[in-house]
Length: 473
Image 1 (spheres, one colour):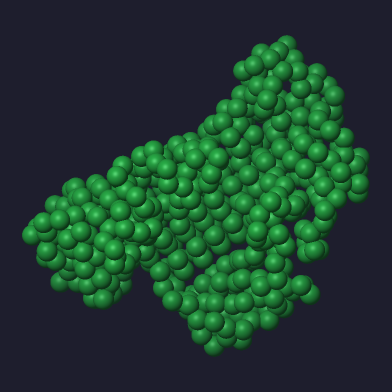
Image 2 (tube, rainbow, N blue to C red):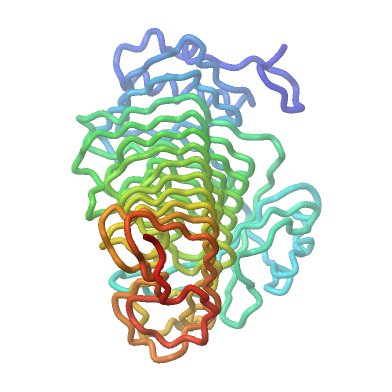
């Protein structure tokens, strides 16, 4: 017997929903159960689901519904799925696996040595870390703080990547979970999900947990205007090596004044987002605890790491009419060949009060600015309030490098600020910032004076050759 792909296992036939009552189903709820039962059986038998001949389906979420479990290889063959939900908030598809707890010392976490746990000595595993000592005690204006998380890919007891920040500190209280993984790619591909206008509850589309090597590609999610909010259309948590490729998200359950995300990520190492196109009232991304992220050829209104991240590369992307938001970011934030249309490239979310050191670079980027959006970094409020964790107690601002960039003045303005500040009460010297380097900056539409900031703040001497120089014609 043979499957349509090779995974180094005994070859078996996939299962078709037509063998589980899809053709005989009379109602949308019965069609839901036909899909659910097919996937449950496929998972139990270690085979996949064959959607050949199933091109369009109307389903409804029943009151006792459970998420449809995904197999390792989910090729939907361009299925159009119309989903009605008048029952409950619900995840439609889920890919997950259980985890086990373990003890690993803080010293060994930082060394990348996990062989003290017998289960981790051979093979590949995800080690999922949570610090039970709050990274941020309380987000200003909210009733919660921030819990940092990290994920490490371990092979034969040795960590193949590092945590965002060290764990061997007096404050850290690590909680460790782990699960086995393999090198086979888990695929979800070729589906359009339409959440219907008459739905009274949210149907989240995909929930991916505790996975390594996942590809979500050729997926379209359409959401009508609605009073519903707080969307998590695609949720990815505790995962490593994730690819989102050719995703279209047309609308989310959100308002311009209330959140709702097309893509929510928490604790992900090595995520790649390619050819994502979206429109939404709120920012399309809501992420935390992100280590090594790459965006390429996307057109979106925002990429964000709410709190705790490291090393982000964004290439060939178009950003429109909002901002990219970060806090507690480390390493390098790099934009290459990006276009910013009335868009703030970097906003440091001051409510976390976590102004950590990182480097910011722009290469061959285009900034289409007006007199309301004429700065690169919105640092918001530098306040005297200090977080209790030493790692996020001091205020830092990034070094900035621009190389071969262009500024187009869509509306006349006469200033280009590196940093925009709403309020400054911080009396200490801002750390890390030492250099602002600008090479070959072209200005069209008028003259600009390039300045460090719109407000004064205490800093060490900055190497900034173009400070207060006038550019443009």
